[in-house]
Image (cartoon, rainbow, N blue to C red):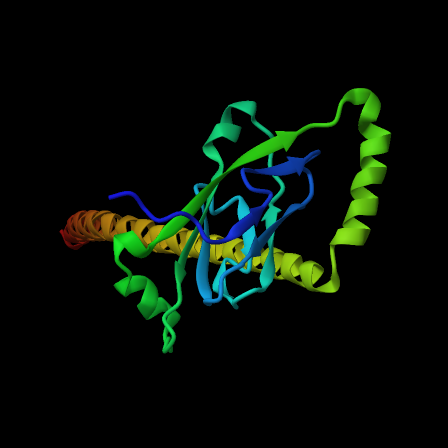
Length: 226
């Protein structure tokens, strides 16, 4: 069964464009408009969730209103072969009049109630002779488009990435510490028998030496007496 036609109006409708260089966060704006007389639930999904920070990535669009979604591409080394792997999908459904739990509505939604629109990602690299101009363009666009709210979202994304990195490093350190303790335990357990053997050998040598010493002293004393 074919899915119903998307009720939301997307701007841009088919493609999100990101202009490099990609050494910093690059933001593309996606406008979702609801021309109907019903509230609409939406979700924005991507095939590369680690590369993008999307705010908001879900919510409700009231009847006759619109919402702006900020799609923030995180810094990365551009690979032309990877661009075809980056895609977005805007999924939506009409909200029931008595909705109290949006997640519950998504879980209980029937396939013929879901609507979706797919978006490609386009990556543009500035030419060598355009670098100064593109740099100025990027600076001016960032000043005009990045509102305080967008800047706050970018900072939150960076904070979450730093926290994730910190947790990965702590986990790595814990594994290394556990491995070191196991190696020390194995070394100590392997050393104990050798230490005991050395002690036993030392005792045996001293015992033999004392017996020989007593024998020699006894022989000398016996000759003196005779």
